[in-house]
Amino acid sequence: MEQHKLNGEMYSFDAHPKDTVPLLRLSLRKLQDFNPEESERLFKASKDLGFFYLDLDGADNSQAMLQDVDALFSLGEKLFNEELEPYDFGLEGSYFG
Image (cartoon, rainbow, N blue to C red; front, side, top):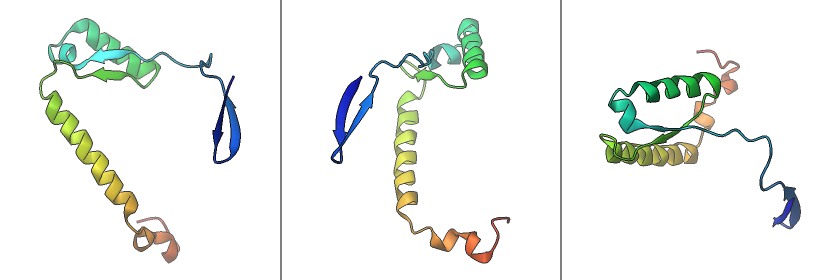
């Protein structure tokens, strides 16, 4: 167990927990090339774990995708910096709409 201090309090955690799940790394380039083995790995990772790493190395449009990700993070920052009260329909007694 490792110990770390945060905000004046000590916390312990296992640096190498035993209950982690190894995630598959899938190649977008191979998927774009319709590689049957990589397609099967994608299906298995999606079905069994629901998560995987997507390797963009050598993929078509990978730089554009990364720019889109950056834009989404910027949009998320703007959204969470907005005052949310005008959008809280709970003040009207219902969240249905």
